Image (cartoon, rainbow, N blue to C red; front, side, top):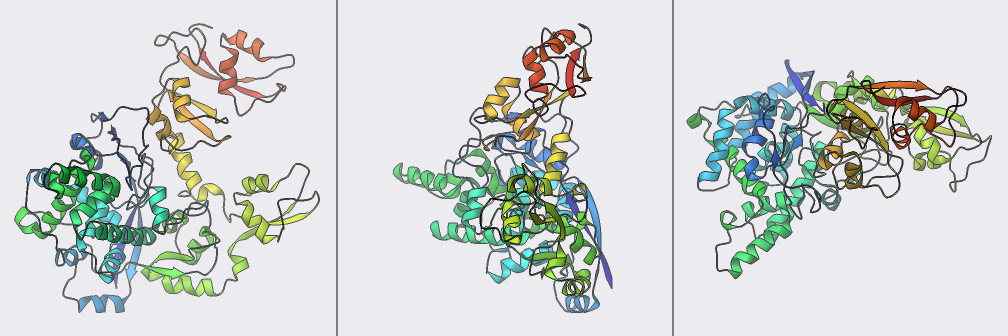
Length: 561
């Protein structure tokens, strides 16, 4: 038996120090209204030297690269490949997956300055490809199989390096997510559903098929020209079509190299071609691609119904984090009740998992509570309390509408373990992003009807893009009333505290316990702050009246109290 270690890299909320932006339109990876209030190409590369992914962004910022969040915490999953698979692999002439890709490269292109610039960067940063290979290892065999089965050029197996460094948890603040970096609308067009429970953009197999379908659609649109199709995959079919029409009108050439395209796209295609050239001529460039054995390390297993990920992990002798890392499409503590009903499992765990699954009735795959309806309860309130959806509660209890009656009993599915055990769920990933210290003081803002990122950024005098990043969102995302945003400040300003010098003040955070007879005005006067600032700092706590014993957060300049 051969033991492999799957180093699955998990999201830790690392945002590139480079914050280059482009006003791209029609893009699958950057929506047309990605930024409305920021100027393009602002960059700070001073702290990114330790990360090749970040250095790549910094080195190529003038070509319009776009910042993507990458995982940094590796988790090792030991896989013992069964003997029959090893024996079958021994009969194959090709032993390494990159060699398998190399043997089927088919793009014809002439070397040029743009390709050389990208190739030189990759050749100078071999450690970058080491990290890429670790991320790719659990999935690369299955991706190559899918490409081969559908007669796609194997250069496309290199495209996730350009898109996300093979990171299924990657996201950009252009609202693109997953290994293949789809925005929501394009993902929907090409079969990747997105629900409260599940996001197909992060499902490696679903998004790979979506990328194949999208690229085939683009290839047909551009009469078999792969460079045009790839450019459109990055910047959108509308953008490339307009550039072709413009060149035709001016009597110019319409090949990819002659088109006027966004700077990101002008670098994007050369990156893929540079990688293909390095792989095809690795001996010439003395570049050692990290070896990944030409054997499957994971397998898709049909599960038939919704299951708690903690229970599934126990069945497969995995931790919840290991299982979730292999199945990043699932947003919550369980799979989607409406499918897909499949899980990616390490190849040596499949038999054990399937046996345990077969012994477990569908109703036993979730944990249940019996909730007695109280006055004030609603389906929405119960769904929030138990971290599920109103549709599930309605379906399980065969309710005909949204009305529930006091003293009725409802069955509600709940997580088997505490929610922080599901550390890669959407909620826990967001909590990690929001808790990452990005300033001296953290404020919380509860979204009101009509709020936008622009309005809030102006109110607190913070950068629009930073505000979105602190909350794991894109600047153009819709804000829903009641959502709590975090805001990081490095100094007190007259907008957030009263009569405090913007640089000389020494700020401290206090927790004040409300006493009998207190009012906001009285507390504000005591600490020399404004009533509206007290209200802002404690939005989620303040009701119509203050209550004795209530805790309030106050930011105080100790040099002035």
